[in-house]
View 1 (cartoon, rainbow, N blue to C red):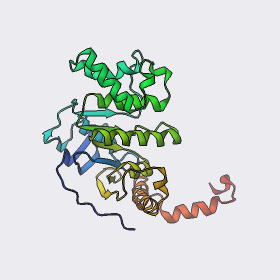
View 2 (cartoon, rainbow, N blue to C red):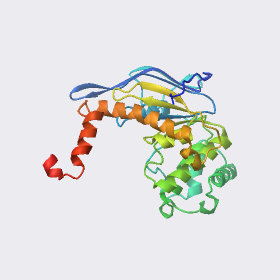
View 3 (tube, helix red, strand yellow):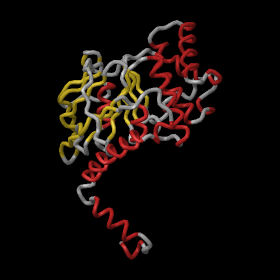
View 4 (cartoon, rainbow, N blue to C red):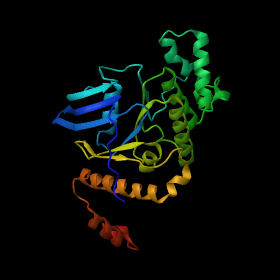
Length: 291
């Protein structure tokens, strides 16, 4: 199956155009991202995948306002991004909860900073905690929660201020496989209920397919957009969908793109023939003899 071509209507709630970012190091400038372009439309779920070090998180952090491009344009709702803002909620892989605050107090924190009254904060927090299945834990402290529950609180806290977009940087990377699947479904449910736009970074191809409307594939560093892929799978989606021929084929196609870039990132030292040869040599051989 050929990877589906993409030509969505471009209304661009998030727009990244001609994005370049370079870091100064002791050995000179390092180009992290080069001439990257992407769009996230209103209500759309878009993922970015690519080999390690390709600039996925760099792009996400630029949209969040944590990084400024060396050149290029980043806008949210047609306004240039000049720094972090309440119109963008951010969720990181590391749990970023305040350990001295309860679950509900963590969720209320951003609302309090925006001047919302105590009773209004409590109602808003409890509503979102209910959607995330956390109502029974609102008075618990983070050290009493599992990893999946902590990340649910982090997502709810990011959503509590009513952002236009939700940005997630490998939020489920530290979770076990079963919890990860549950968290993907919870995130999907929240996204569909609230109707916001999502930009999601992941290393996991299956996760990107399961969650996304579209997927951007990045090249090895300096990262740019190698492919833009529509996920032609119906919603709602469940775990059984991953066994469908369409899902399996899309996984294979995206995997081939990532593998090609991962080999480039290794400096061309490995290729498919070399890997096959290595597998043959290692099969039944003493590793010391092979090395």
